[in-house]
Length: 237
Image (cartoon, rainbow, N blue to C red; front, top):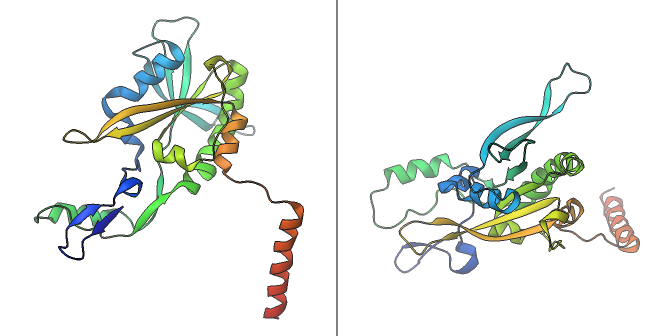
């Protein structure tokens, strides 16, 4: 988020958490191979896993072997037989609002001091990114991985993780279905650098609780909402 000074017109990042960097492109997690090394060391005991991308995971029940779902990345320990591997899902946050193209054009043409104020208005959409996109992916893939005795690594940034409801966890990798690799940014140098923040180990069920990020209403409270809507419908008639 950016703010513009009424006194000087200077454009600055908003103070505090509001101005913190958010990861809106999954390519940002590729910096220097840090994430893959971290996942490999934690789940596989391997500093340099081989990355195998877009591996077909589900085939159509009524089609002739067509792939209907893929695991984006599989990290494999080189030279091991039987294969030793884990899956990796990388999730940036979608944004809601104006497209980025006008801002890219404005940046390319900018010749003034400091930063130009953003052309478009947009915000991170954690509801679309978490419950609507990431959760279905985990619900489809993790049960099979769990039956095979394999782990799913999920990479998100600190703000994405903070947008989830608190997730109960497990103590040891052997008891988890999902290992959440949470990254942050170190801005102490000339440009931001990706840095490890924490690993949080959960079961699939605990992850779904966190991604849902909601508490069910009581029956009485829910029916009161129904009555209120019925009353409004009556007024419209």
